[in-house]
Image 1 (cartoon, one colour):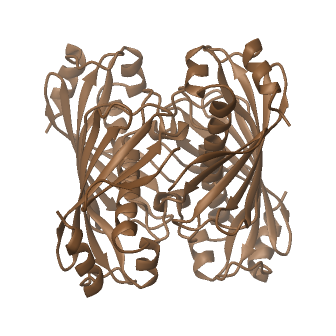
Image 2: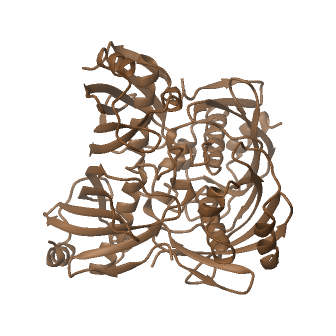
Length: 144
Length: 144
Length: 144
Length: 144
């Protein structure tokens, strides 16, 4: 199993994925930019679990774009091991969301990285807009 | 669930993965080079299922490097949909393996792409070498 | 200099790019799927040089999507070395183009890979369409 | 021309690269994780310009691994446009370096993103080590 989603608590989502060979670099660990991709995977799972598919949100005319990202790397993920992403929504504003991520080795629980991203809501023209009320309400209900 | 592995028949392995936002391009479908990554994922699952982790094979001193790849694209995979990769080993030679891949939408079964890759066995210096006898024997037992 | 474009003959385009750390894998060479990205870079340069920016073609309502790809890998590209992509258009049909690529180490000329891709012209709905006459005429003038 | 390097001042390095189709996502702009790859490209150019190829540093037994990254995104880079990365070294410690990046549209100068990464020096076993004195001295001479 490479990637699965389960509920950890009311407000956290756990996603798992296996490190692909394509994701490694010549240092023998997953290249650091991939952690942002894994965060996106965790965030997608969080939103699907608590609201609906992000693909549907986008079809409804609201895009959530990353405006800020902070990552701290503690250890390197190895090829073929399962990494776990624990995603938490820590803040809901009218036009922005802040997510936290804890990324660990699934087997040992060792911490690999922590990250935080802010997402802003954009209309199809790329302008900052207030999030639809229902989306915001559902997210607020599961924010930490 | 993003990616899971099950046995289809004695000689085929089925892997599934969700299309990541990172994998899409501005045409609104998964960028074509990602199919080679999905094939690698299917091949990794095949080898783990029938022999052992490819990570272990590599630690034993044998690398399997792609020497040839052929892909035919039929339809585009969309963001967040589950794609299924069905991997079959169709030929085992002393220094090469040939894998076939059928990639479909998991939900509808619609064919997205077919692919074939040849892999050659290399020693740590990158020279072509004969595959270890036990690896070859185990692969031959599950080749189509 | 990482990536530059020059004219080789009337019908070939030479592009160069430096191998990024992100493109390497734990085998210590560029991961094979990146060659398809480099082919796309060469093809983009070819089209810009002989017709106009592919971005403009797409804005005019025609997308060129890869329908077939064949790659043969001869040697591995190393981190930070300059790879050269020589792109040739070998066939122009009403709804398809066939490009050939020769990828070498820029410094030594050693062959790294050869590839061929077929691209089909699609309308915004993803349906196969005849290429605009002027686009086709300009491409035919530079086809090998 | 996709990617070239020039000296801006004594202590900054300017790199340029064209946005690849592979780097776009279905929002029609470059996927945010690619900015970390562009930062790595800028950093590689900075180190090559002021010291020597990072590939050589790594062969000498010292790896520089990203331990912290912070990114702020202001606007989206479009396919085929040239992005400029201006890299500055702002701090040199015995076991760590801090780089700043300003990423802009080359044509208009519009700011796309700013970023900061901390890199730590590791031995081949992945342990934190003091940077070689000559490497540190040369970097200190060009730090802001």
